[in-house]
Length: 400
Ligand code: PMP
Image (cartoon, rainbow, N blue to C red; front, side):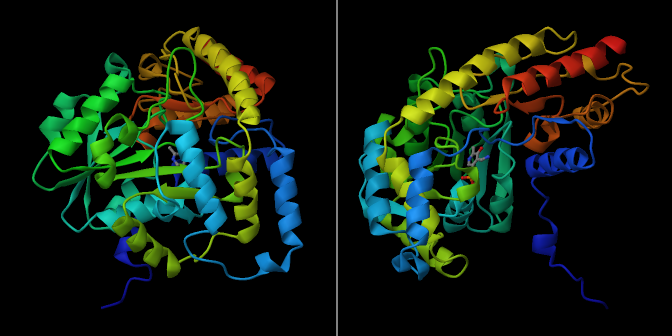
Protein backbone atom coordinates (compact mmCIF):
# COMPACT_ATOMS: atom_id res chain seq x y z
CA UNK A 1 0.00 0.00 0.00
CA UNK A 2 1.39 3.40 -0.90
CA UNK A 3 0.81 6.43 1.23
CA UNK A 4 -0.84 9.34 -0.52
CA UNK A 5 1.51 12.28 -0.77
CA UNK A 6 -0.95 14.95 0.30
CA UNK A 7 -3.26 14.29 3.25
CA UNK A 8 -6.91 13.62 2.54
CA UNK A 9 -7.85 16.59 4.74
CA UNK A 10 -5.74 19.17 2.92
CA UNK A 11 -6.00 17.46 -0.48
CA UNK A 12 -9.74 18.05 -0.29
CA UNK A 13 -9.44 21.84 -0.10
CA UNK A 14 -10.34 23.59 -3.33
CA UNK A 15 -8.29 26.63 -4.33
CA UNK A 16 -9.87 30.05 -3.90
CA UNK A 17 -11.85 30.48 -7.13
CA UNK A 18 -11.78 34.26 -6.91
CA UNK A 19 -7.99 34.35 -6.60
CA UNK A 20 -7.74 31.75 -9.41
CA UNK A 21 -9.78 33.90 -11.81
CA UNK A 22 -7.69 36.92 -10.90
CA UNK A 23 -4.47 34.96 -11.47
CA UNK A 24 -5.71 33.77 -14.90
CA UNK A 25 -6.53 37.34 -15.92
CA UNK A 26 -3.16 38.63 -14.69
CA UNK A 27 -1.33 35.83 -16.55
CA UNK A 28 -3.12 36.66 -19.82
CA UNK A 29 -2.30 40.31 -19.30
CA UNK A 30 1.36 39.47 -18.69
CA UNK A 31 1.30 37.56 -21.98
CA UNK A 32 0.30 40.78 -23.73
CA UNK A 33 -3.50 40.31 -23.92
CA UNK A 34 -5.75 43.23 -23.04
CA UNK A 35 -7.85 41.57 -20.36
CA UNK A 36 -10.44 43.33 -18.21
CA UNK A 37 -10.52 41.66 -14.78
CA UNK A 38 -13.66 41.74 -12.66
CA UNK A 39 -12.33 38.93 -10.49
CA UNK A 40 -10.58 40.26 -7.41
CA UNK A 41 -12.46 42.00 -4.64
CA UNK A 42 -9.95 44.74 -4.03
CA UNK A 43 -10.21 48.52 -4.21
CA UNK A 44 -8.15 49.99 -7.06
CA UNK A 45 -7.06 52.98 -4.92
CA UNK A 46 -3.67 53.30 -3.23
CA UNK A 47 -3.65 53.12 0.58
CA UNK A 48 -4.07 56.67 2.00
CA UNK A 49 -0.75 58.46 2.48
CA UNK A 50 -0.92 58.93 6.28
CA UNK A 51 -1.29 55.17 6.71
CA UNK A 52 1.67 54.42 4.45
CA UNK A 53 3.72 57.03 6.33
CA UNK A 54 2.98 55.38 9.70
CA UNK A 55 4.24 52.10 8.27
CA UNK A 56 7.36 53.70 6.81
CA UNK A 57 8.20 55.17 10.20
CA UNK A 58 7.66 51.83 11.91
CA UNK A 59 10.17 50.10 9.64
CA UNK A 60 12.92 52.33 11.09
CA UNK A 61 12.04 51.73 14.73
CA UNK A 62 13.84 48.68 16.19
CA UNK A 63 10.90 48.19 18.57
CA UNK A 64 8.99 46.80 15.59
CA UNK A 65 11.76 44.47 14.46
CA UNK A 66 10.93 41.90 17.15
CA UNK A 67 8.18 39.45 18.03
CA UNK A 68 5.19 41.13 19.61
CA UNK A 69 2.11 39.81 21.46
CA UNK A 70 0.28 37.14 19.43
CA UNK A 71 -3.12 38.80 19.82
CA UNK A 72 -1.94 42.17 18.54
CA UNK A 73 -0.35 45.40 19.80
CA UNK A 74 -2.28 46.60 22.87
CA UNK A 75 -2.76 50.09 21.39
CA UNK A 76 -4.10 48.64 18.14
CA UNK A 77 -6.55 46.41 20.04
CA UNK A 78 -7.69 49.45 22.03
CA UNK A 79 -8.08 51.50 18.84
CA UNK A 80 -10.10 48.69 17.23
CA UNK A 81 -12.39 48.58 20.28
CA UNK A 82 -12.87 52.36 20.02
CA UNK A 83 -13.39 52.26 16.27
CA UNK A 84 -16.01 49.53 16.71
CA UNK A 85 -17.92 51.69 19.20
CA UNK A 86 -17.59 54.70 16.85
CA UNK A 87 -18.66 52.94 13.66
CA UNK A 88 -21.26 50.40 14.74
CA UNK A 89 -22.00 51.33 18.39
CA UNK A 90 -20.77 47.94 19.57
CA UNK A 91 -19.04 48.40 22.94
CA UNK A 92 -16.25 45.88 23.52
CA UNK A 93 -13.10 45.57 25.60
CA UNK A 94 -9.68 45.56 23.93
CA UNK A 95 -9.21 42.09 25.44
CA UNK A 96 -12.02 40.81 23.19
CA UNK A 97 -10.04 41.70 20.07
CA UNK A 98 -7.64 39.33 18.28
CA UNK A 99 -5.62 40.90 15.45
CA UNK A 100 -5.22 38.48 12.53
CA UNK A 101 -3.49 38.24 9.14
CA UNK A 102 -6.41 39.66 7.24
CA UNK A 103 -10.08 38.95 7.65
CA UNK A 104 -9.44 35.53 6.13
CA UNK A 105 -7.45 34.33 9.11
CA UNK A 106 -10.20 35.67 11.37
CA UNK A 107 -12.76 33.56 9.44
CA UNK A 108 -10.56 30.51 9.63
CA UNK A 109 -9.72 30.76 13.32
CA UNK A 110 -13.26 31.60 14.36
CA UNK A 111 -14.73 28.58 12.62
CA UNK A 112 -12.00 26.24 13.90
CA UNK A 113 -12.40 27.61 17.42
CA UNK A 114 -16.16 27.04 17.44
CA UNK A 115 -16.85 23.87 15.47
CA UNK A 116 -16.52 20.22 16.49
CA UNK A 117 -16.72 17.21 14.16
CA UNK A 118 -20.39 16.48 13.47
CA UNK A 119 -21.53 20.06 14.01
CA UNK A 120 -23.47 21.86 11.31
CA UNK A 121 -22.76 25.41 10.16
CA UNK A 122 -25.50 27.20 8.24
CA UNK A 123 -24.11 29.21 5.32
CA UNK A 124 -26.65 31.13 3.22
CA UNK A 125 -25.83 30.95 -0.51
CA UNK A 126 -24.57 32.61 -2.61
CA UNK A 127 -21.70 32.59 -0.11
CA UNK A 128 -18.16 33.93 -0.09
CA UNK A 129 -15.94 31.05 -1.24
CA UNK A 130 -13.79 30.99 1.88
CA UNK A 131 -16.51 30.15 4.44
CA UNK A 132 -17.06 26.44 3.68
CA UNK A 133 -13.44 25.29 3.78
CA UNK A 134 -12.62 25.92 7.47
CA UNK A 135 -15.99 24.35 8.35
CA UNK A 136 -14.92 21.17 6.56
CA UNK A 137 -11.42 21.30 8.07
CA UNK A 138 -13.05 21.32 11.50
CA UNK A 139 -14.86 18.10 10.53
CA UNK A 140 -18.17 19.95 10.57
CA UNK A 141 -20.75 20.12 7.80
CA UNK A 142 -21.67 23.25 5.88
CA UNK A 143 -25.44 23.49 5.38
CA UNK A 144 -26.22 25.80 2.47
CA UNK A 145 -29.46 27.73 2.16
CA UNK A 146 -30.12 28.90 -1.38
CA UNK A 147 -31.37 32.44 -1.87
CA UNK A 148 -32.15 34.29 -5.09
CA UNK A 149 -33.44 37.59 -6.45
CA UNK A 150 -36.95 36.99 -5.10
CA UNK A 151 -35.74 37.60 -1.53
CA UNK A 152 -33.01 40.05 -2.57
CA UNK A 153 -30.51 37.25 -1.85
CA UNK A 154 -31.50 37.38 1.83
CA UNK A 155 -32.17 34.29 3.88
CA UNK A 156 -35.54 34.03 5.66
CA UNK A 157 -36.37 32.80 9.15
CA UNK A 158 -38.48 30.04 7.55
CA UNK A 159 -35.41 28.78 5.68
CA UNK A 160 -33.26 28.95 8.81
CA UNK A 161 -35.88 27.16 10.86
CA UNK A 162 -36.29 24.42 8.23
CA UNK A 163 -32.50 23.86 8.23
CA UNK A 164 -32.07 23.83 12.01
CA UNK A 165 -31.22 20.52 13.67
CA UNK A 166 -29.87 19.67 17.13
CA UNK A 167 -26.42 19.72 15.52
CA UNK A 168 -26.67 23.30 14.28
CA UNK A 169 -23.83 25.15 16.00
CA UNK A 170 -23.61 28.40 14.10
CA UNK A 171 -24.78 30.67 11.33
CA UNK A 172 -22.39 32.57 9.07
CA UNK A 173 -23.89 35.99 8.37
CA UNK A 174 -22.54 38.71 6.09
CA UNK A 175 -24.12 42.08 5.32
CA UNK A 176 -23.20 43.87 3.07
CA UNK A 177 -22.62 40.64 1.20
CA UNK A 178 -19.86 39.31 -0.94
CA UNK A 179 -20.82 38.11 -3.59
CA UNK A 180 -24.34 39.52 -3.97
CA UNK A 181 -24.04 43.10 -2.67
CA UNK A 182 -27.18 42.48 -0.58
CA UNK A 183 -27.66 44.44 2.65
CA UNK A 184 -30.06 43.19 5.33
CA UNK A 185 -32.44 45.77 6.79
CA UNK A 186 -32.45 46.21 10.56
CA UNK A 187 -35.68 44.28 11.18
CA UNK A 188 -34.39 41.21 9.35
CA UNK A 189 -31.10 41.33 11.26
CA UNK A 190 -33.07 41.52 14.47
CA UNK A 191 -35.29 38.58 13.50
CA UNK A 192 -32.26 36.44 12.62
CA UNK A 193 -30.44 37.44 15.80
CA UNK A 194 -33.51 36.58 17.92
CA UNK A 195 -33.88 33.24 16.14
CA UNK A 196 -30.23 32.41 16.87
CA UNK A 197 -30.58 33.51 20.50
CA UNK A 198 -33.72 31.43 21.01
CA UNK A 199 -32.01 28.29 19.73
CA UNK A 200 -28.54 28.80 21.27
CA UNK A 201 -26.97 29.15 17.85
CA UNK A 202 -23.77 31.16 17.43
CA UNK A 203 -23.57 33.88 14.83
CA UNK A 204 -20.31 34.62 13.03
CA UNK A 205 -20.96 38.01 11.47
CA UNK A 206 -18.62 39.36 8.83
CA UNK A 207 -18.65 43.18 8.84
CA UNK A 208 -15.76 43.81 6.46
CA UNK A 209 -17.96 45.90 4.09
CA UNK A 210 -19.60 47.95 6.86
CA UNK A 211 -18.74 51.31 5.27
CA UNK A 212 -19.75 50.42 1.73
CA UNK A 213 -23.53 50.86 1.58
CA UNK A 214 -25.44 52.86 -1.03
CA UNK A 215 -28.78 54.53 -1.56
CA UNK A 216 -31.17 53.86 1.33
CA UNK A 217 -29.27 50.81 2.58
CA UNK A 218 -27.86 51.05 6.11
CA UNK A 219 -25.33 48.90 7.90
CA UNK A 220 -26.33 47.42 11.27
CA UNK A 221 -24.23 45.22 13.52
CA UNK A 222 -26.10 42.15 14.74
CA UNK A 223 -24.87 42.19 18.39
CA UNK A 224 -25.94 45.84 18.61
CA UNK A 225 -29.40 45.10 17.23
CA UNK A 226 -29.67 42.04 19.51
CA UNK A 227 -27.37 42.81 22.48
CA UNK A 228 -28.18 39.53 24.29
CA UNK A 229 -26.47 37.71 21.43
CA UNK A 230 -23.04 39.17 22.26
CA UNK A 231 -21.99 36.11 24.27
CA UNK A 232 -22.62 33.88 21.25
CA UNK A 233 -21.39 36.15 18.55
CA UNK A 234 -18.06 36.70 16.81
CA UNK A 235 -17.62 39.83 14.70
CA UNK A 236 -15.12 39.68 11.83
CA UNK A 237 -13.61 42.76 10.25
CA UNK A 238 -10.41 44.22 8.82
CA UNK A 239 -8.76 47.17 7.10
CA UNK A 240 -8.66 45.65 3.58
CA UNK A 241 -11.83 47.08 2.04
CA UNK A 242 -12.32 50.24 4.09
CA UNK A 243 -8.81 51.65 3.66
CA UNK A 244 -7.75 50.03 0.36
CA UNK A 245 -5.30 47.82 2.29
CA UNK A 246 -5.84 44.34 0.86
CA UNK A 247 -2.11 43.62 0.63
CA UNK A 248 -1.28 44.71 4.17
CA UNK A 249 -3.05 41.72 5.70
CA UNK A 250 -4.62 43.05 8.87
CA UNK A 251 -7.99 41.87 10.11
CA UNK A 252 -9.50 41.03 13.47
CA UNK A 253 -12.09 39.01 15.31
CA UNK A 254 -14.07 40.27 18.28
CA UNK A 255 -15.74 37.77 20.56
CA UNK A 256 -16.28 36.38 24.05
CA UNK A 257 -13.12 35.83 26.14
CA UNK A 258 -13.05 32.03 25.84
CA UNK A 259 -13.29 32.03 22.04
CA UNK A 260 -10.66 34.76 21.69
CA UNK A 261 -8.34 32.83 24.01
CA UNK A 262 -8.79 29.61 22.01
CA UNK A 263 -8.21 31.38 18.70
CA UNK A 264 -5.16 33.17 20.12
CA UNK A 265 -3.69 29.82 21.13
CA UNK A 266 -4.28 28.53 17.60
CA UNK A 267 -2.65 31.62 16.10
CA UNK A 268 0.31 31.27 18.50
CA UNK A 269 1.18 28.01 16.75
CA UNK A 270 0.58 29.16 13.20
CA UNK A 271 1.45 32.76 12.37
CA UNK A 272 2.11 34.41 15.76
CA UNK A 273 1.82 38.20 15.71
CA UNK A 274 0.72 39.99 12.56
CA UNK A 275 3.64 41.87 10.93
CA UNK A 276 4.38 44.84 13.23
CA UNK A 277 4.73 47.31 10.37
CA UNK A 278 1.30 46.33 9.05
CA UNK A 279 -0.13 46.71 12.57
CA UNK A 280 1.26 50.26 12.82
CA UNK A 281 -0.35 51.03 9.47
CA UNK A 282 -3.65 49.56 10.70
CA UNK A 283 -3.41 51.67 13.88
CA UNK A 284 -3.13 54.83 11.75
CA UNK A 285 -6.07 53.61 9.65
CA UNK A 286 -8.56 52.78 12.40
CA UNK A 287 -7.67 55.75 14.61
CA UNK A 288 -7.90 58.19 11.70
CA UNK A 289 -11.04 59.65 10.19
CA UNK A 290 -13.30 58.10 7.55
CA UNK A 291 -12.72 60.76 4.91
CA UNK A 292 -10.85 58.50 2.47
CA UNK A 293 -13.45 55.74 2.63
CA UNK A 294 -16.24 58.28 2.05
CA UNK A 295 -14.48 59.36 -1.15
CA UNK A 296 -14.00 55.76 -2.31
CA UNK A 297 -17.61 54.97 -1.48
CA UNK A 298 -18.81 57.77 -3.75
CA UNK A 299 -16.71 56.42 -6.63
CA UNK A 300 -17.97 52.87 -6.06
CA UNK A 301 -21.52 54.20 -5.98
CA UNK A 302 -21.08 55.83 -9.39
CA UNK A 303 -19.67 52.61 -10.85
CA UNK A 304 -22.43 50.59 -9.24
CA UNK A 305 -25.09 52.57 -11.06
CA UNK A 306 -23.26 52.19 -14.37
CA UNK A 307 -22.50 48.47 -14.13
CA UNK A 308 -26.03 47.67 -12.99
CA UNK A 309 -27.48 49.55 -15.97
CA UNK A 310 -25.01 48.13 -18.51
CA UNK A 311 -25.47 44.53 -17.37
CA UNK A 312 -29.26 44.80 -17.56
CA UNK A 313 -28.99 46.21 -21.07
CA UNK A 314 -27.48 42.92 -22.29
CA UNK A 315 -30.27 40.66 -23.56
CA UNK A 316 -30.36 37.49 -21.44
CA UNK A 317 -28.71 39.13 -18.41
CA UNK A 318 -30.62 40.33 -15.35
CA UNK A 319 -28.99 42.00 -12.38
CA UNK A 320 -30.40 43.09 -9.05
CA UNK A 321 -29.16 46.47 -7.88
CA UNK A 322 -26.26 45.98 -5.46
CA UNK A 323 -26.89 47.79 -2.16
CA UNK A 324 -23.47 47.34 -0.61
CA UNK A 325 -19.88 46.09 -1.00
CA UNK A 326 -18.54 46.39 -4.57
CA UNK A 327 -20.03 43.46 -6.41
CA UNK A 328 -22.72 43.03 -9.03
CA UNK A 329 -24.17 39.53 -9.20
CA UNK A 330 -26.10 39.11 -12.45
CA UNK A 331 -28.04 36.04 -13.52
CA UNK A 332 -26.96 34.57 -16.86
CA UNK A 333 -29.89 32.16 -17.06
CA UNK A 334 -30.99 33.78 -20.33
CA UNK A 335 -27.63 33.11 -22.00
CA UNK A 336 -27.23 29.45 -21.07
CA UNK A 337 -28.20 26.80 -23.58
CA UNK A 338 -27.93 29.29 -26.43
CA UNK A 339 -25.15 29.74 -29.02
CA UNK A 340 -22.29 32.02 -28.05
CA UNK A 341 -18.98 32.35 -29.91
CA UNK A 342 -19.53 29.03 -31.68
CA UNK A 343 -20.41 27.12 -28.50
CA UNK A 344 -23.50 26.52 -26.42
CA UNK A 345 -22.56 27.19 -22.78
CA UNK A 346 -24.61 25.02 -20.44
CA UNK A 347 -23.26 26.47 -17.19
CA UNK A 348 -21.97 29.79 -15.87
CA UNK A 349 -18.58 28.10 -15.52
CA UNK A 350 -18.49 27.41 -19.26
CA UNK A 351 -19.81 30.88 -19.97
CA UNK A 352 -17.03 32.46 -17.89
CA UNK A 353 -14.41 30.50 -19.86
CA UNK A 354 -15.95 31.54 -23.19
CA UNK A 355 -16.13 35.18 -22.15
CA UNK A 356 -12.51 35.12 -21.02
CA UNK A 357 -11.36 33.45 -24.22
CA UNK A 358 -13.41 35.44 -26.73
CA UNK A 359 -14.05 38.79 -25.04
CA UNK A 360 -10.96 38.86 -22.80
CA UNK A 361 -13.09 39.62 -19.78
CA UNK A 362 -12.64 37.78 -16.47
CA UNK A 363 -15.47 37.34 -13.98
CA UNK A 364 -16.03 34.72 -11.30
CA UNK A 365 -18.68 32.13 -12.21
CA UNK A 366 -21.48 31.61 -9.71
CA UNK A 367 -20.40 28.01 -9.09
CA UNK A 368 -17.63 29.43 -6.88
CA UNK A 369 -20.29 30.86 -4.56
CA UNK A 370 -22.70 27.94 -4.58
CA UNK A 371 -24.89 29.76 -7.12
CA UNK A 372 -24.66 28.27 -10.61
CA UNK A 373 -26.15 30.41 -13.35
CA UNK A 374 -24.76 33.67 -11.95
CA UNK A 375 -21.50 35.57 -12.12
CA UNK A 376 -19.72 37.96 -9.79
CA UNK A 377 -18.36 41.23 -11.11
CA UNK A 378 -16.28 43.37 -8.80
CA UNK A 379 -16.73 47.04 -9.64
CA UNK A 380 -13.58 48.02 -7.79
CA UNK A 381 -11.77 48.78 -11.05
CA UNK A 382 -11.33 51.96 -13.10
CA UNK A 383 -14.55 53.32 -14.67
CA UNK A 384 -13.16 53.08 -18.23
CA UNK A 385 -12.03 49.48 -17.77
CA UNK A 386 -15.34 48.54 -16.23
CA UNK A 387 -17.35 50.06 -19.08
CA UNK A 388 -15.06 48.53 -21.69
CA UNK A 389 -15.36 45.10 -20.06
CA UNK A 390 -19.16 45.08 -19.97
CA UNK A 391 -19.32 46.51 -23.51
CA UNK A 392 -17.15 43.62 -24.71
CA UNK A 393 -19.57 41.09 -23.21
CA UNK A 394 -22.47 42.95 -24.81
CA UNK A 395 -20.74 42.75 -28.21
CA UNK A 396 -20.00 39.04 -27.76
CA UNK A 397 -23.64 38.34 -26.89
CA UNK A 398 -24.90 40.47 -29.79
CA UNK A 399 -22.70 38.51 -32.19
CA UNK A 400 -24.28 35.29 -30.88
N1 PMP B 1 -14.88 38.67 4.36
C1 PMP B 1 -15.39 38.94 3.17
C2 PMP B 1 -16.88 38.88 2.99
C3 PMP B 1 -14.57 39.25 2.09
O1 PMP B 1 -15.09 39.53 0.90
C4 PMP B 1 -13.16 39.28 2.30
C5 PMP B 1 -12.22 39.58 1.16
N2 PMP B 1 -12.58 39.11 -0.08
C6 PMP B 1 -12.68 38.99 3.58
C7 PMP B 1 -13.57 38.69 4.59
C8 PMP B 1 -11.23 38.92 3.92
O2 PMP B 1 -10.47 39.97 3.56
P1 PMP B 1 -8.94 40.05 3.93
O3 PMP B 1 -8.46 38.68 4.27
O4 PMP B 1 -8.29 40.60 2.71
O5 PMP B 1 -8.86 40.97 5.10
